[in-house]
Image (cartoon, rainbow over all chains, first blue to last red; front, side, top):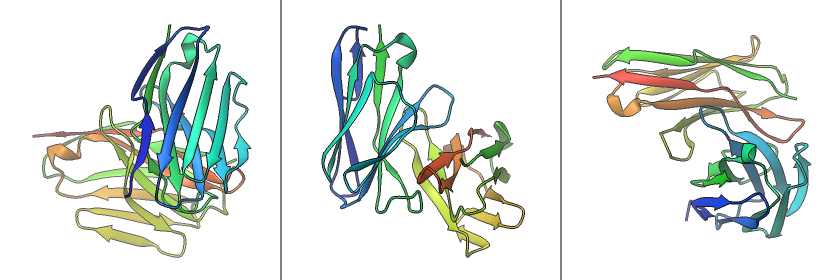
Length: 114
Length: 112
């Protein structure tokens, strides 16, 4: 299995809602990432987990809360988002951390905040 | 942190022509340089990568060259086909953030 699976594929939420994005990989990768991608822009790093520990938080607002329950799963909890948070949220994993090996991307969750 | 610059932002070529996309990076400790292709509405997918101990790598119609001294690397696509049309991102290791940093992307359009 060489896939990173994200759910849901699409999500529409109000500014007062709480929702979660889920990501799963079964490749035995030890690093997992959340990226945010706006239209016509590159993926922008949000969080890095290495060996299930949060190693990088790119000054992301606290309305985004990551969680890594185990080595195969990564969640992103969303609360009180703003319309400008609407974007494609990409999960990725790599065999090792450090940005020194291929990052495999999930298909993304397209989030719309209304 | 790593700063990756990518040019051009858009590139239009005729089918069968070659396409070249160039990137520069700032982190002298970077040692891994992948190229991703992203079709509309899809995930970024790796098409080729190169490590700092290699100057050139080729895979069929795709090649990547790396000049560590000048801190730049390039993607070369020969005999372009309409299905090569997509956005291409270069990336480089950000040793401080321990993740990949992406260039701004190049929209390649291959005209049939």
